[in-house]
Length: 76
View (cartoon, rainbow, N blue to C red):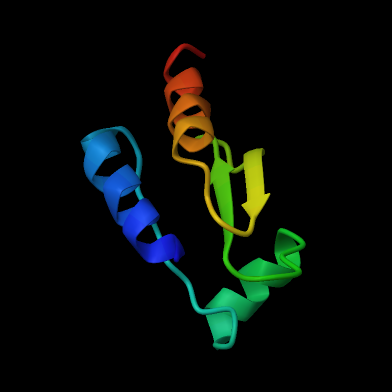
């Protein structure tokens, strides 16, 4: 189950990152899924401040990888 993991990541990151949850079956969510090549759910995409993809994971999210990807952006 991805929701509890993502909830924890969101709490841990606090104001370091904004977490958006989108439904790929609706208009905006579907458009973004197509833009970023989402082929399955859940998919987690981490973007930098310029909108570049820095991390993508389909399936169960890996907390450590996601935190490292976001914290790595702080050093840029």
